[in-house]
Image (cartoon, rainbow, N blue to C red; front, side, top):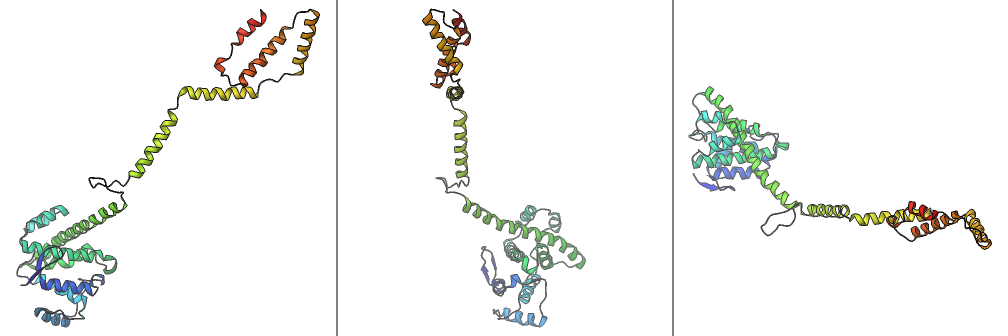
Length: 304
């Protein structure tokens, strides 16, 4: 039988590739119930005869092409999965176990199974149009992948083969989604470094480092500068609220000057008022509160 290589490098019969290409060209993947709906027997016999002569007739119903693909696998001398131990097929409970079991197939059967599984995966990707999910596609393909003499045993084994094919389909779909997700991550990432590694969060990291540096610089201001600023604020408030000489203070000064002229002792309260004014003047000049004189010392000095 003449064979050709498919897009994955599998060597499969050319007749399968011709039917697959025509099925895709005529929109068979989007047809509802593809591989589940049977075509008319008369048309299928005509197309089968043309295919045996190496001709794919035009205007063939997509359901007829799908039925002939299943018939090709069903009419093989031995089923594609017949070389596997049925007990091991029944024991497969995960996608990894199924993939390991596929590795035990001979090269010819492995290539045919890989081609069929990818065809089924293409159908499942159009599930929103053809209403065929992984379980439905595996169900219609399973009876064509094995051949058993006992019909009851074949029916029971077909259920296990259906689960086996379903897990292989899901695994193939996951493998297809991997490169797509990786490509999307690369598109959203930043420029690569010398080693070819991308850093998608470089800009965000730099911004975060800048903000942390600014916050650190704010918190690490010298304590003395902070105290100086507080001192200036306090001195400014004191200057604003410093007492203004009232009429009583002025009158007291006049009385003191008159007493000095008359030879009488000077009133001590005037000295206190003068010092209070001088202290407020010092505050208005920006002198810190730490440089002010002790009020107790002023009282003692006033009584000397």
